[in-house]
Image 1 (spheres, helix red, strand yellow):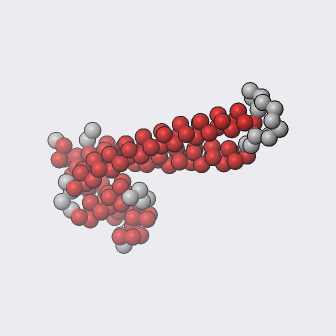
Image 2 (cartoon, rainbow, N blue to C red; image 1 turned 45 degrees about the vertical axis):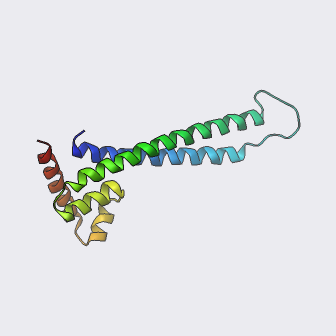
Length: 135
């Protein structure tokens, strides 16, 4: 994977992690509304069975989240290695805030005191340098 693909893949993994976390939160919220009837009468499709299935699904999704977090951690380390190759500290800071810290361009421009346009130019310049290093 080239350096730019490494950074954009990290961005995609961050979004996937967020979606997985939201999915788990929704499942947990739904599980709170399911409760066994408590009447002692067993039923294969009764509330307790649904709660059991929901608990299993939540456990599976949490296991997947752990796998995703491991991949994300590895991708962050790889992206940090890519960014360490940038000589310009301002360009490195822009890309670090965007791809490792997950900030949007407006947040980055505000925190660094640059205009949005200048931040985008710094990003383009950094991407050109990273691309040139691959050739």
